[in-house]
Amino acid sequence: MIVVLKPKTRPDAIETFVSQLEAKGFKIHLSRGEETTILGLIGDTSRLREESFLTNDAVERVMRVTSPYKLAGRAFHPDNTVIRAGNAVLGKEQGNAPLTVIAGPCSVESEEQIIAVALAVKAAGAKILRGGAWKPRTSPYSFQGLGSEGITLLLAAKKASGLPVITELLSINQIDLFADIDIIQIGARNMQNYDLLKEVGLSGKPVLLKRGLSSTVKELLMSVEYILAAGNPRVILCERGIRTFDPYTRNTLDLSVIPWLQKETHLPIVVDPSHACGMSWMVPPLTKAAVAAGADGIMVEVHNNPAAALCDGEQSLTPAAFAELMRQLAGYAKLEGRTL
Image (cartoon, rainbow, N blue to C red; front, side, top):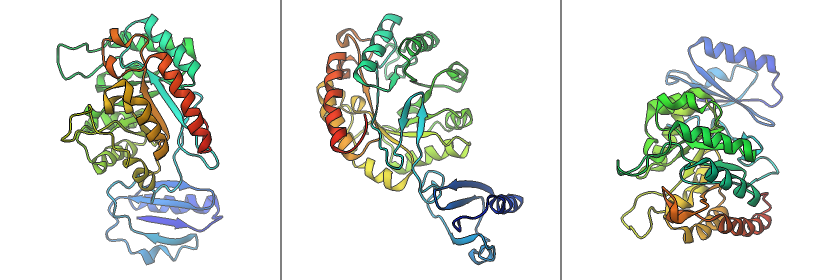
């Protein structure tokens, strides 16, 4: 249930009203817009009558929410959520629609490699450095990442470049190692690992949640709800392609999800074309298409020597190719009145 308060309701009146509702056993999600304050009631509201709220002078109207993803939906939170990590911004603010690029190798392989890539992508205009410390692989015989050593090397690259960093968390018992990581990534295979989602919800850190390989959009938003319900509002959605009947690409990139999610939710949306197509030559056109569809950010794999990469070299851009892509994106961003 949503209670919309009248404009210019005094803060003390809001506080008193919230306390009264909490005393009745409801958890209250408070959303303050520029003109309107919205109270979202979480709990069993089935026996509440809308008319009973209208006796309060502060209440303008009351609505019931039928969507199962209450905290992720715009009904509870009509304004866009904007997430900051270092100097990077993800999400559209009033009068400002940044296009944020996340770039780096699929896997951290050595200190020399990750620092070289970090400096290269920063010089080209990337705002966030990505790199995998642990790698979930289909085959148990494939390279699984450097583990905790990878975290150490990623933080060394953060220090050398000044870029905030994002890396994937695979297990609850790894979370203490993420104290200095700026954004926690939850990969497609863990999208419905609810214990892990609750844990990152308690962490308070920004979380980038990738859509599962065969997951519906509703399932993605219900997974988001676990993080939000645990008290962490800093969630970034990531479309990385889904499994369909046609194997001509690694996955099928669903760009129609971008405008749909922007209408349905308040959360920023990032597109990962590298994992979607699995081929480096397809990354630039898919990146441009994602920008045209309105994505808040792009996540691109970049490796200084893709032919020798220990993981996903075939979908990684070289630093030179990435710099050319960023040059082209600058023109796209300018046409749409966005900042890169």
